[in-house]
Structures are given as structure tokens and as C-alpha cells.
Image (cartoon, rainbow, N blue to C red; front, side):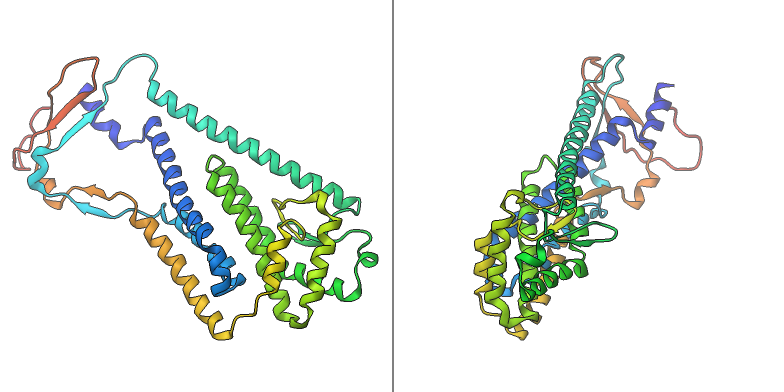
Length: 345
């Protein structure tokens, strides 16, 4: 009966196996995403001058692509049948009482869930605070909402800003809506909750939000190239009026939520030639795909049995009977014909 249970249990996922697989997948996703974020943090400033703010914003796609690539099936390598006699299979012994390994895995899962809930609560509180300020007419300009993003402006919007300034602000916010930036920020907030223990994820979220605004600024200036000075004055005026509400929105795009100095410096840069824009687009696509391939290739190879292995019986014989240690079974690779009576296990 013990031999029968040993042969059946590997077919089904045990709780401990499921927890290990889940934690391993989470770790691989964070390692791949962290590497992509580190790459972006290192190159983003130089890339702004080389390929422009809009291309840098698109280049952040390398992070989700790298994370998603870790869920693709890894490469498989067929084992050499001649090496089968050297393979040793270690099977944990079945003990009564507490399985401390599984208990530790369960505690890690609970800590991960608890941290995500705490961060989600903090982000939801921040969103509610902004919504209350917006209801009072004190917040904005901003884009808020996931299903139906809307533009939020303060009550004194028409008094504080001139007609030309209002057109620039509304153009900026409309670009956010056209690109779905508030939805992207909501997904980023979700990833932060799932990967709350990874500091690179939080640093990357801040840098992505800044590049999002810089990209939007560049799009506005491209549509209205003679308004750079007015646009800079609007940035300064908005930043001073809303300094008490600084901080990126979890579900939305907040105009004055990012460093003013970086945005003003970007406005002073010369626009890129059209040819460089095309080259930048190809470079972004190539780097994003390359990041995904690198993340997939970094996964450990999966060893599979060769087709000839089906003609070999693999009875297991214990070689270590110490009850305090995991039992070790050595594979017997003596060939035997498939026809006829099976050897007793």
C-alpha cells in the first residue's frame, strides 16, 4: 500500500508543491521585472535626449513583457538514457505531526497577502482623499477614473488661468485620456500591491509616472510648438497652487504631481527630427521584445525523459532506512521487456 501511494501522489499537486510553485513563479516574475526596471532607471535620462520622451514612455513596456515572459513554458532538454543509472531521486519521508516546511511556506503566503492588502488600503485612502478634494473644487487639473476617465479642474479654473492656458491644460489632459494613461496607472498600482516587497517596483512606478507626464508634455508642445513659454508658466502656476496635494494618483493622472525642474528642462530641449522618431519606434519594439526573450531564456531548463525511457522499468528500492532522514531511492535501469508479467514492487 505504501508503494502504491508513492506512485500515485506525484500525479497530483500536493499543497506544499503548489505553494513552492507559486512562490517560485512570484520570485521569477519579480527578478525579471526588477532587472527590466533597473535597466530603465539606468538609461531613462540619457534616452530622453536620444530618442525623446514619448519613446522613453513606450519603452517601459519592457517591464510587463519581461514579467509575462516568465510564465511561458521553459525550454526542455531531453535527458541522455545512458545517464539514468546516475540519477538519484530524493523523496521526503512521510511523518506524522507538523510539516514545518509547509508551515513556513504558508506563513510566507500569508505575509505576501497581508502586505498587498495593506498597500492596497493605503492607495485606496489616497484616492479617496483626492476625490474629496475634487468634490470641494480644490483639486486638479487631473484625469480620474478607470472605466470612464474624466477631467477634473478646480472651481477657480477659469479665473486662475487665461484662455490660452486653459487650452494647453485641457489638451494635456485629453492626451492622457486618449492614451488610457489612467488605466495604465491603475494596472501599475495593482502590480505594486502584488510585488509590494520589491523596492524596484515602487521606484519604477514613480519613474514611469514622471515619464508619462514628460511624454504628455512633449505631445502637447508638438501639437502647439509656439506655446513653450506659456506652457512652462502654466506648469509653475499649477505647481505652486497645488503643492499640498503632490503625489501620483493610483487611478488617474495628476498634473502637478511630478518634479517641476525636470519638466521645465524637457520643454527647453529641441524637438527630435522625424527620422529619429521612426528609428526610436523600431528601437523601442526591439528592446521590449529582447527583454522578454532574455527573461524567458533566463529560466532554468526543464529535463524531460527521452522517448526510449518508456521501454525501461524503473522499480524503486530504498537505500537509506534512517527514519529521521528523507528516504533516498535509486533508479534501477535494468532493461526489461514490456510484454509479460510486471515485476513486483
